[in-house]
Image (tube, rainbow, N blue to C red; front, side, top):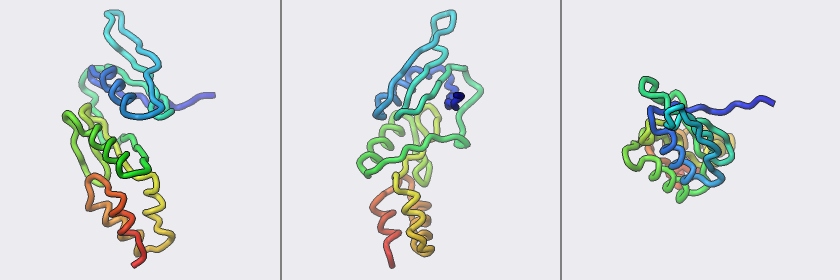
Length: 153
């Protein structure tokens, strides 16, 4: 059966980036490294949290944009903080509303796994609006603050 595998184009740091990602996330590993005739790394096949990916060293000219991001759902603020801090380390930067860009230019969203539930607020439109507005004012998401925003008035 065919499957879709996200394919990420790096300038020249595909192996370094994938090693970093696979150390950061559980259930992750590098499955293979394909090399060009000169011995340099060309393609890295890897798994992040059970999802297969491929990364290529394709050279400059094709930078990542936020039109594609990887979303990480977390259950606790501690997980959110750990992953957020690791992804912005050494040259990454925060953006807004749970989004960040890592040191390789790849966009990520680090979000609470219950975000859909918080945004729906049990059908309470006013509470959902408060959650949405609270999220819009955040850079790194704060689970307790989002829960408080969605609490009955």
